[in-house]
Length: 253
Image (tube, rainbow, N blue to C red; front, side):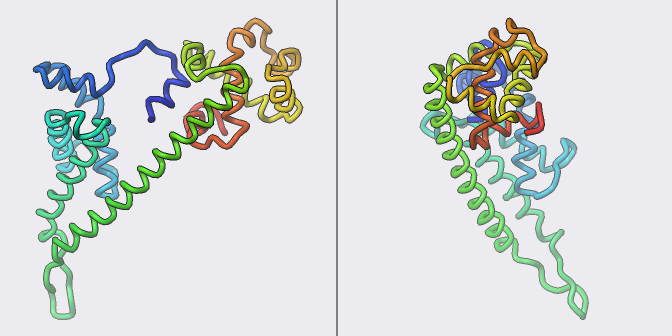
């Protein structure tokens, strides 16, 4: 889902999906395997951090466990195990990290009472606690994925009301970062001025004359990015919270 959102803001040529890449790796492409592992180190670290509740560095033992687990996921993944390699890998990584924590619990979980060192905390209790929390996180993640799908479906229907399609927005997104930023800023301007928003929704087209005045941007530039600006205006003006998250790194939403 995340890559689906990303396509809205960055136009690019189609590349192999991660699952297609894994299929090539499983056929013996070790160079591609190393490249994939290296590319997903941030994902591995983030997944481990969710279990350990702290920032994970590449020098940490837990990170090494995560790398091994991600590689295991690559080698064991098949479509029968699910549609997403990353979901499968997340489960494997968290399981291996939990196993590692259990094995190292005894040394790090001693409690002191009035007479000195008390009994050791049962590593099974700690393991179950982690697993329960992981189960809650997994359930929450699934709920968010469902909400994202619903939001995308609603966004597509809103685009249709303007005579646009999701695919058009992907294909016609400005190629250069500065052009995308300019288009998003124009959309933000529309969102901040009720009269421009009303015009957009009533006429189903951009108020180009007013935008030339407010945005100090040429008509040619506005018309060239018309569809993208409309799409970004819809995202900013309605309750598309997940889509808006992808704009927060560009502008203050």
